[in-house]
Length: 589
Image (cartoon, rainbow, N blue to C red; front, side, top):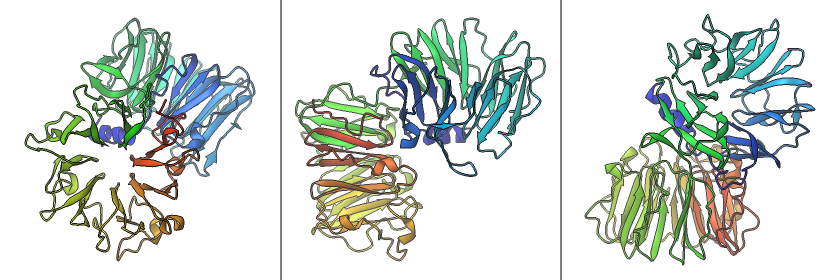
């Protein structure tokens, strides 16, 4: 597959929470299914869903007797019980947005499969009913099929095994629906986005994109295999192994004893006999194997939290006992806290690639090991630090250094900085308070006006977000500015002459704000003993839903799509990278 497609898929699923089951919350699982950005498991307590998705997608449905065939798609899921097919979530790109919570689709089904944004069920009388998106005829099932034994759906294509032969319909990319001739006794039909595979008497056969002329790995020990995205995974005697179109297999760590398997677009999970549910990220190979993803919920507490920092899709907290606890997305080791960091810590900052802490004016960073992210050897003592999207900045009131990847000018520090009192690093730009004035840089080609619309003096606090920034004036008033694309608030009300956000909530505008924090396209503020979040709530409304249980909030910190704050009862986090238990999860035990 092309590098462009790989990079798009990795970015598209970067915030995906994949291993919230690692703390044995669902050790008694009977079925599991991985969608684009959420996972559902059938347990003795019913269906439990988690992941980076909307609340309607994760809300557990009411199920009837004998539940089976649990399947997940983009933002919806379906399963069969004795009353028929039941679905929940939504299919936003169908002709009419279908909210499916608890919706019964078909009676007396025997088979069910869910694609990206369509689904199909087969009745006991071999009638196929499909629903959802139908841009390429993926729901237009043939009417003459008999003795249907299997059905499997891809991105916008569908296949069945009927009367001992495979038939496919829908969109075709490099032969997605062109079934190879001569498949002997096809069975175990599975689908990725644009490819399909079956087991035959001659081994595993795959076709479609990117599996044209594909030769499957030879392994007589394979007990079960399945497909998703551009990958295939199988259960063998030595555990789970996965492969792409090259046919090279990669073993998954600690997967011996797996007996149920599901593969999503770039993530996969399995149920094992002794570890419950395990998950891993496809394509992310470490020392020859797939490493299991760590839990997004910390297993231990942090007593009396002093600092908390929310990064891209991860969070770290530090308490008076001297321990740093990190959780969340960890592709480059940004959450693997070194044991050599001295105490006490005076600052903690989590970015997309690196996490940094200041102890006794010394900066310690960990995560991405590329040389561009290495802390400069002659940095010296530091009092300020901020880790952002692709850059880290640190220094003192007299001098700031930035390093990492110079994307959109984030490393091009203005020469006139002096008396620096605050520093905040966003997605591709950085802001600082210099000589009591807010100055920002970076964001070239992405942010129209990176600096405040008016000279902003004596700012109490500043934050740099995705393509915007916010600050609190000396009178406690909130001001936000930046690019009107991917912006905080209703973009239709932005004054393009000043590029200032005009629709900060009235209650925030009129309040004496004490803290503010910026995410990718949302912001949160603390005032009058409460928290208010605003911004883009149409796509990911969870990031604006502040828990009502937080008392006396402080230490506000936002990642791309989540926010954390410390209250009297401990640390609470909300947003889209956290599992269902995190909105009121307390780290103070």
